[in-house]
Image 1: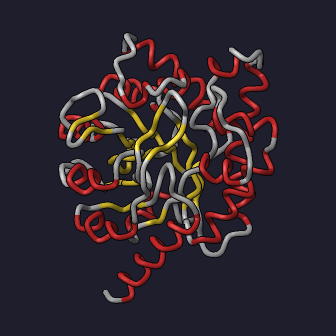
Image 2: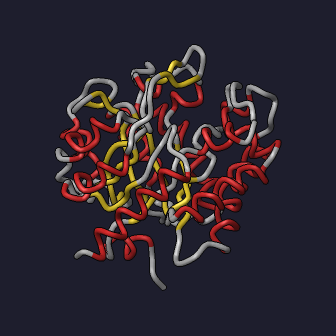
Length: 299
């Protein structure tokens, strides 16, 4: 049976786009601390519909709605550990069910967002939470275990702002038997916390679980220069669709970018996983998938 690792060696795969922007387009209010993770409990059909829309647009990998789903975050709203475990597993199941009706071979990536996503204050773009590596490992491990029990094809360790948290998540991955990609939030050619990306990418080389490393939730113009610094592993890149995130109003300001125009530069920089993050919808993913298909046809 073909594994996700095998699929990466066969050529670039198209990731989906933002979950939150599509849910908001459906009319859902995501202003609460749980963001899109709230709908895992309140309206799972809405999440499934987003997965189906991205698959129909040409995405080959669905990223689950578990980015902001954590035991700590749900507990603050009175949700028990048992129910949280069920919701984490549901996130994988919803994507898997959507995948069953998709054309071609598609994959499910279980999203694992940073500690800062649980805080819901924009700190995933800053890092420096004041926690030790051991404390961050203890935060991430239970969620990874719950997601692993639902058997995703890969973990999407995403929007990680600094080396300390990256080290913690890599520790937490040990023994789970599921591959992962590791992508950072960045400022130019450093992590959001200011560490050199060369060091951040090199850190992933020491993990047997990590199959790709790169950047996400970043300005599109920064992605190719950042990815060019990655000499450790195959690349993953999925930028935002443009504008600036305002954590106070929890909204985006500014114009959108045409991310598909950057696809050739990503491929030259070694990317094997390409897609979009916030403000990127099915229309943009279709254009990206069409560009990659045309490039493949041209040889």
